[in-house]
Length: 321
Image (cartoon, rainbow, N blue to C red):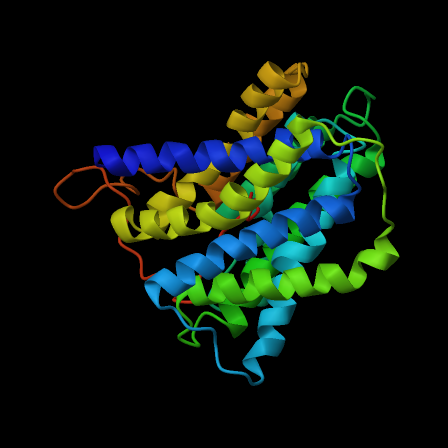
């Protein structure tokens, strides 16, 4: 990986990893609906500018917009709201680790839903190990991680992102929609949906909004929901899909570190160990622990060359955070 790519890789990990403590901070003064609407408006503005500069046109109106709307609900609206609510009832560090299970749940769901993804001993072992890691992170024997409802909401985010990935693969990836066009269309649709839903989500009018909350929303919108997507696709072009998606292995641990430093959250042994187990299970299930999986015939370590679907969406862990 070249120096500029390594810098982009680390920057993307920091942006996505920092989204969890930022969401926690924003929840101090704003309701989940207000948080999500604010970040979507800002993210849409950024992507509209990027689309204009790159001359990326929105898809033509037709049935494809039904697929885009479903993708938007699964990839932005539902997970953003759940995560904003969940972090009001659990720690940011635990939320970051639980949503890191997205690739694991995607692996399990794809094995069931996609004919091209067959179950193997390695994948089955990875899924079993991963769910053991999830149980370890949630620690049902302890109440140190907040309420079980908050934890389940964050875990549900991972499941929804998994459904999102499978849906995109089945219905959008072969439609020839450029990545920036797809992202811009989705954030615009998400903004409209949130604006319509806002009266039903409850509107909290705080006596004052701190500068930390304002900075959190601006960061989540401009960087997490807007520029991170552009950065991710730049990485795909530079180092390939597998290399770019490996940033998801950094995100939970960056989230742990930033939550401890800036929010003063304690890092318990079960969250740290459980996070390691989840990442190991993903590597195992995706066959990345096989000797030579990351090497070319000449022996030089580099990500495998993959053909990336043109209608790619950012993987959360994230989350398009």
